[in-house]
Length: 203
Image 1 (cartoon, one colour):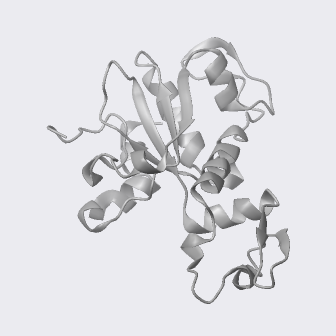
Image 2 (spheres, rainbow, N blue to C red):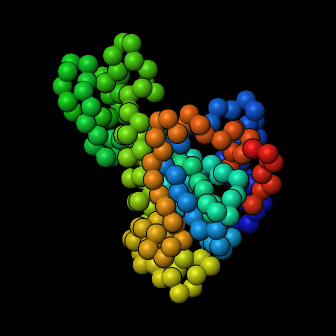
């Protein structure tokens, strides 16, 4: 994927009005080694934020300004509907209005919302983190993904979890949830997504 394709991608389009946009909270952070090949990083980001029908995660990706000590740091989140759809897929159990514990379904969402609860408050921080991690760990190699781009000897087999393999090879160095108090300290809005795009100075 070229720089132009990255800059013109879905998230880049959403960030064009970044001053008026409130970024979603970060739920999972991924650190990628600082010496990663550019095409490898592009491929990983494409796998995370691409469409599900293409075997990708449909997650929201934000990138911190590069720091050689930390490598490339990606902040992951999801859209409101993505959280709910995956909660249903995971058969997440919540209490409904009648006090019964049962699986959340998008079609019956209102049955899980008391009159004083907004849909944004249905899922806890921990549940959202688990959902993002679940999506990430289930981004799997397709038949055409026979190796990690940039690393011809790093073999992939169809159905393998791409990020677990990248952890094994040391491309992904850390993957962890962000705690509530850390979420409040997130970097400013103006660095919203795009690897290799000029980042704001002094942030």
